[in-house]
Length: 194
Ligand SMILES: Nc1ncnc2c1ncn2[C@@H]1O[C@H](COP(=O)(O)OP(=O)(O)OP(=O)(O)O)[C@@H](O)[C@H]1O
Ligand SMILES: [Mg+2]
Image 1 (spheres, rainbow, N blue to C red):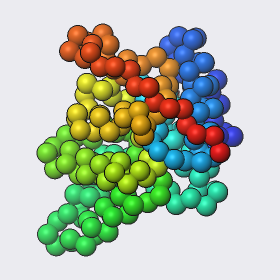
Image 2 (image 1 turned 30 degrees about the vertical axis):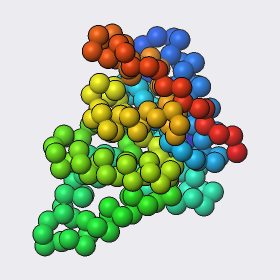
Image 3 (image 1 turned 60 degrees about the horizontal axis):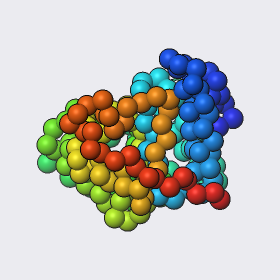
């Protein structure tokens, strides 16, 4: 999955206007990949090309010599859980250190993992570490802000560090839900140019 093979016109959308969002997201993702700094949140409903675009960022960055890891959130938690067994303490530490410190982390499908106190804590620790260290991080999700743990949501949507790419129409802020009507839209800076 590369920028070359990604064709924004192929992505299936419900409304024609959404195609322009996909094309815009594609362009912004290319800019981000040229010099990945800070965080990029790629959000949209299922099948909008989020994983493809994130993988294109990862492959581009790897080809220009950046250390990259792309992990799917539920798979990462499974790996961490296996490594966390008392018989295997080092494998947990090693894997967790790698995902925490890799230069560019791509975390695919955040929100699709099963929520348990342990899983929530590990994801928070991972994202909070990278947030505090300002390490470039790309996150894809098809869940909206309301469904995210608040500690994770505040970091992912911090306009100081994070930009959001919407893949077509997606009610990320749950504006139709009165419980979230007071959330301000993020004023995320566009990704930097190289
Ligand atoms: N070469 C291509 N370039 C761009 N999009 C493509 C290409 N080939 C297939 N697609 C489209 O990609 C979409 C699926 O992409 P992807 O798996 O990245 O979606 P997603 O947003 O990650 O979905 P989910 O939330 O379910 O994980 C489909 O709409 C498919 O039509
Ligand atoms: Mg996906």
